[in-house]
Image (cartoon, rainbow, N blue to C red; front, side, top):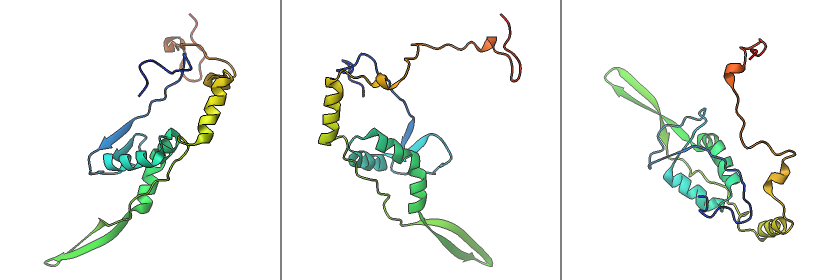
Length: 154
């Protein structure tokens, strides 16, 4: 959440938005090849408790969640007979709990010392940009030609 009064030291800042689908207790199906992250609320709650508010850690875990969930998943083959027909399917069996790394950066005294020094020096996060970009960039696609052609003259 952004504070209503704005950031206490900077008039301008950048906000990055990501989508996250939070489900009920049932995680449902995993779609690891999708770009939108899906996680159940209990797993997210555990992640947030262990992250110490470190957004880089949270985003890394969400980006790699499907891989780690697949590694923790244990399956077994179930087979039974119905008359002369054998039915076999793969089922999920009890697996270890997916664990997350514990973060400590946000509450680190080193972090706060770096922030205090940064502010005392009058630095700004935008100082890392070589040139400040314009406030608004508008691309008029009607003036562009199709692939391989020169732009249309106006």
